[in-house]
Length: 70
Image 1 (tube, rainbow, N blue to C red):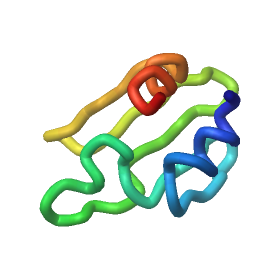
Image 2 (tube, helix red, strand yellow):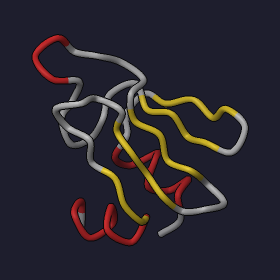
Image 3 (cartoon, rainbow, N blue to C red):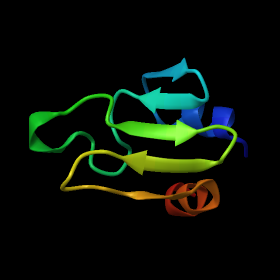
Image 4 (cartoon, helix red, strand yellow):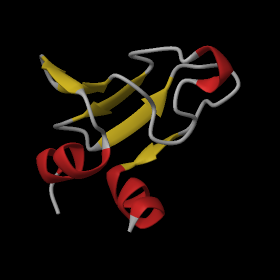
């Protein structure tokens, strides 16, 4: 699976901006209780991801994301 296939299957609404796929909602925290949007980014060339919500803060390599979501 590549980053584009993953985005289509698991991220719901997303946008591609430069080298990043930005999801409307983080697949881990889903935006928390306030439904924060566009806090999750998947870097295409580096194959890394992160959520900028302080209470989530998930980050890592793309292979970890694939492992977590099957």
